[in-house]
Amino acid sequence: MSTPSQPSRLDGASATQCVTLAAKATLPTRYGTFTSYAFRVSAGDAEHLALVMGDVSGQASVLTRLHSECLTGDVLGSYRCDCGEQLDLALRYIAAEGRGVLLYLRGHEGRGIGLSNKIRAYALQEQGLDTVEANLELGLPDDAREYDSAVAILRELNVASVRLMSNNPKKFDTLAKHGIPVCERVALAIPVRDENERYIRTKQVKFGHYFDENE
Image (cartoon, rainbow, N blue to C red; front, top):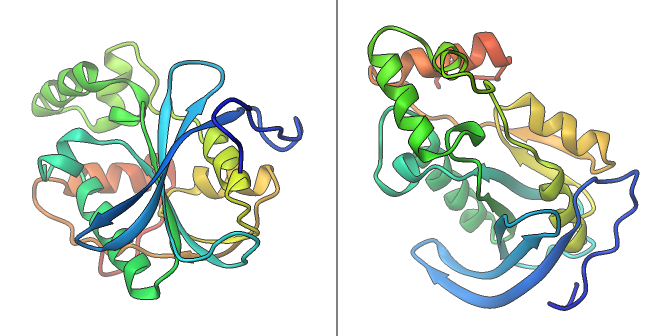
């Protein structure tokens, strides 16, 4: 594990982002007690949080979630998306298993366009555009997130391979590209609601997201 003064030394072919461990502390939560690690991305101001339960160093098939920051869903319980419910379920799964990693990736608000632009996109969705069309109408990428820093953090945690809790094929592709084996996809079965049905179906059709029959 890196010290706060030493950036991680990663193989350049393995990840394009380097991270620095800034702080570490125990974090008791309603899901159980985690060890929290705050990482800074070397190229920029981004900070990410890793929540670790149990022993994951050198371990294979570690239950893992790469979770994109979503203030409206994670904190306020918005039904426009499924983010908050996925976060809750992922933490419950880790707690039930007694071992796992959740990476809370900041700077990913609105698939990377930021909070103000996300609210602007919501206004366009109220006029009939879907979540992808709204971003493009604003002159913004449909998805501006990167996961290379997540790869770097998993390497710092010395995770050998993961069981990934995700419906997003981009996350699987990034981990595989940088040599972190994904042993299994663990579905997060979130109920589809009237408020987010179009959003979820758009992700399925335009981004190729996986969804189980009961999601």
